[in-house]
Amino acid sequence: MVSNIRTNIGMVTKRWNLFKLFSSEIHDSDFWDSLEETLISGDVGVDLTGEIIRDLREKSGSFRSMDQGKGLALLAGILSSHLSAVKGTGEPVRFGESPTAVMLLGVNGSGKTTTAAKMAWNLQKEGKKVILAAADTYRAAATDQLKTWGELSGTRVVAHATGGDPGAVVFDAIRAAKAGGHDCLIIDTAGRLHTRSNLMEELKKMMRIIEGNCAEWIVESLLVIDAVTGQNGFRQAEAFGNTISLTGAVITKYDHTAKGGIILSVGRELGLPVRYVGLGEGIEDLRLFEPEAFVEALLGINSGVA
Image (cartoon, rainbow, N blue to C red; front, side, top):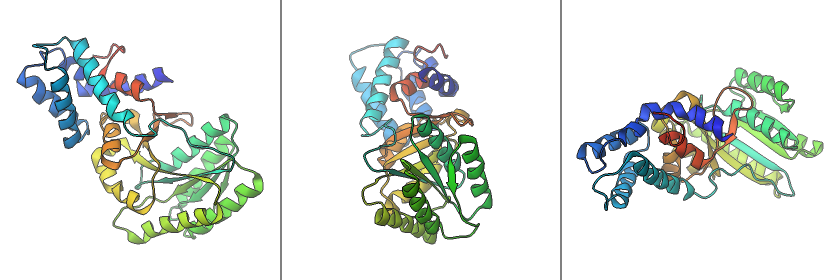
């Protein structure tokens, strides 16, 4: 798994140019300017970039210059510490004696439907009995897509007609999960923006249905973020945390982007642990996020990426 993550993230390193950047002397002013520009353009965010650079300056202060390996190792330690500071980073969906409900939230096009199917596939491989709820009733394509993925993964999908009440889908899916002795219910919701207050209210309604009918269940609310959209994507998604109590984030489409810093930013800006990362289009391409492997791949450490 680690090698796959490094392979997919390796392309990001070429865009960031951090491996080459650390070939210069670390006390050179051009180095710090280039590092700042690289981190911000990679979607780390202005505030967090400032913190990272201050930390690196402090840790490297006793050196007149530094070789590439030493500089990268210091930066790797700083980035890893920022990731590990967010409790729950890289943790899988939780299970207990009662079933687990997983609600997937996010803006349009973030990859919620495919994430739902991939998560179902992974959990079923672990021996869990999973059922899917097609609660995106606004797009017929979303329901059809989830049904197709459900057939591929061998997962039952509870769905209603297009334009129906998403809350009713969730209610029926809960009943089906209880009747079928399922371990996990995964709910695919409609994409929405914070400006659509009626749609955000529907999320609250769905959560009330879960809480009212699944008192003993573990509930996971995962925000799905498209890495390609970078800072813009999760800036819009900040309102989700004001609507639903979120338990983590899933970063999708990561193999298509050089915006590696978004994974660092999610914890800082949204206070959310990155739980999973999508590395491709295949049904097996949803993986638990591994901070150390991510940082090593991002920086080109031990990967030969230059």
